[in-house]
Length: 183
Image 1 (cartoon, helix red, strand yellow):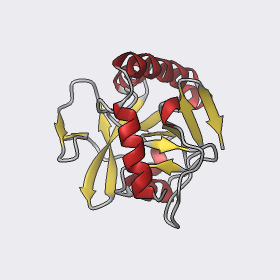
Image 2 (image 1 turned 30 degrees about the horizontal axis):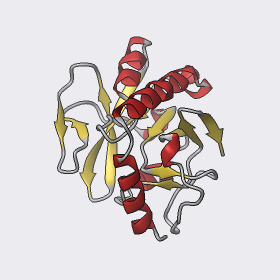
Image 3 (image 1 turned 30 degrees about the vertical axis):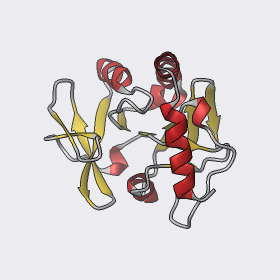
Image 4 (image 1 turned 45 degrees about the horizontal axis):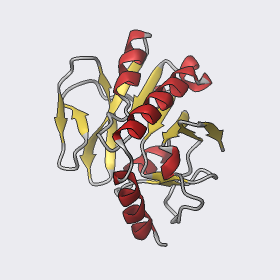
């Protein structure tokens, strides 16, 4: 399968996940992320604000803020380009045309101040190849990002092999409800 076919396959697969599976797997992913060494030592975290299709990051964000961590959410600023923007509970978010929530306001945070990036995906494989939605936003973000990164994925969506292209960036770790795999 090429990348487009893999995207279609995983989207169909994810639509078959039961609400119980999504909820239970999402809770376990949050627990493992909060217990991770990367989270424990991070002061500033770049994380996506999850949609219903993704492992839920909302409880993670709330807990991280309560723990005194600085949270940044992505804000799209051009085709394939996003910037990290500071976020506090209660800050207003807007839904973009792609169904992604981003902050309306907030301070733009330099990547070199971010300790940990929590990345979304459709799927990931066992060697760190991430299958995104195809916009290249996170590949561009990772190009010059030197902090640690963890990709969140439902275990049932993990694939044996993800087709890659020259511009695709590998992730540092994959976190599913079954644990963390480091690359």
